[in-house]
Amino acid sequence: MNLHSGDCPGRTVLDHVTSRWGVLILTSLRGGPLRFYELRDGIGGISEKMLAQTLRTLAGDGLVERTVEPTIPPKVSYELTEVGRDLTGPLQRLINRIAARTPDVVAAWELNGDHAVR
Image (cartoon, rainbow, N blue to C red; front, top):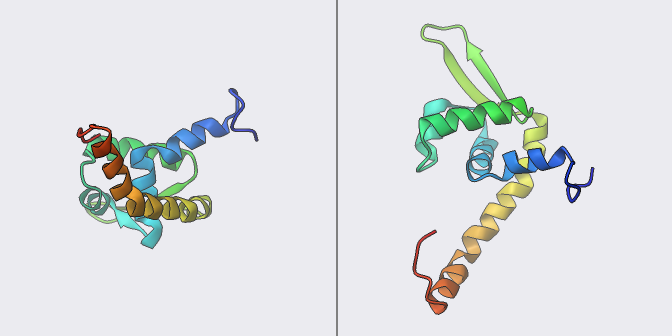
């Protein structure tokens, strides 16, 4: 696969995995299975619609598995597949580096007169 090629299917995977919500959902699931409301409550700012849509996309990509327990009401949980687990290690390291370097980026915004929160 050559992600630099315009017709590479890996680009679609790259888009799904590296979207803001994709990264946050995948890294949230690193600790084990979570229910929908746990993901929603743990990821500030995500709407239920966006969470549901992103979970469907990640499940369709084989990165997240949706499990329904036959209870009343049904208990639904989400967890990483083997492929999802493989991808989230590097993503978590990236998240950690971004968090560590954010003060430097904010300082650059201020230095350049860009005070807008993006």
